[in-house]
Amino acid sequence: MPLPDFLIAGAPKAGTTALHSALARHPSLHMSAVKEPKYFLTDGPPPSRGGPGDVRTYREHVWRRQDYLALFEGAPPGALTGESTPFYLYDREAQRRIHAAIPHARLIVVLRDPVERAHSNWTHLWSAGLEPLGDVVRACAREPQRIAAGWAPFWHYVSLGKYGEQLRDLYTLFPREQVHVFRYRDLVDTPAATLDRICAFLGVEPGIISEVPRENVTAHPEATFTHRLLSGSLRAWSALPGRLGGTLAESLEDRLQQRARARRPLTWDQRSALIPFFAADIELLQQVAGEDFGDWVRPRERSGGLVGARPQGQRQARNGRPRDPGPG
View 1 (cartoon, rainbow, N blue to C red):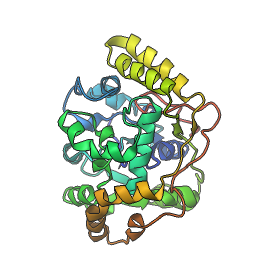
View 2 (cartoon, helix red, strand yellow):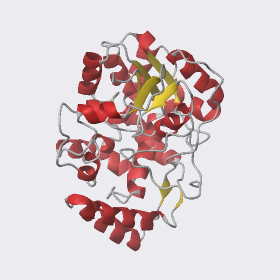
View 3 (cartoon, rainbow, N blue to C red):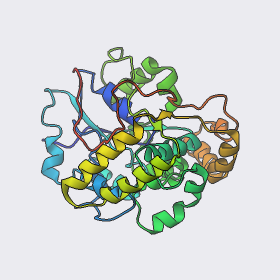
View 4 (cartoon, rainbow, N blue to C red):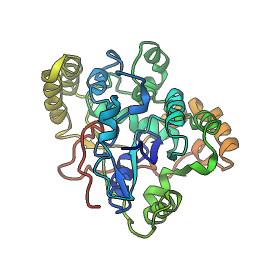
């Protein structure tokens, strides 16, 4: 079984889970049952330590070659195969491993306003009971210490949003015609046209898929005494070896989110405090991409994301698990 033909390479919290599900409905595309295998993030076993909950996530890495190839075994004859690991854009070693293994691969990159992306990332981990800081600005300021302590990339709220640096490096390996870059807002505002452009980029028939499902919508638990108690226990249990810790952590996560409110948009005070983290890279991105991203350093009329109530029955996504591939 050959390696995949294309990868959704970035960015986290930019609609990649929903995009993966949408593309899985195209009869000429076969998406891996595990949405986020993370195969190219390591040369072998994943790390064994990190920040809160990281050990549990590392257990989900599909790092053995035979297991990775098995993700594409069900592909119909002639279908293009793909997977979605949104950390590939950020991880320069992953970029090099992909180029060495599948230099012909097509890469799909979704760029979201980096301030909004950081806030959604923080809210995801806060909602999961893993983020100990109840303020996104403080959490972003703590990032250098967390990186130094070996916390996993999903904690890198600021660094993950520096797309200018990431694309600059990616283009030293892959020609631009093999990389399709678009904005997250296009996926939200004009899903049918955006999916058609992706299909054209991949060389499959457009007009087959037109909707992007609401997936991985983040809730926002209140910072109550109960939240502090439950999330503290969850962080401790997530570090336990074996399945017991993960099972206990999952039950607490469900309790945390049972009565959680919909994710709230950033205030202008929060946004203005976070923009300086990204301003220089946004300028670089404009040079690299040849496109204006000046709206990212201005006030926003709306959040820019799928802010609202989580669909009934949906829980926080854990992307290392097998997913229903859907029709097609």
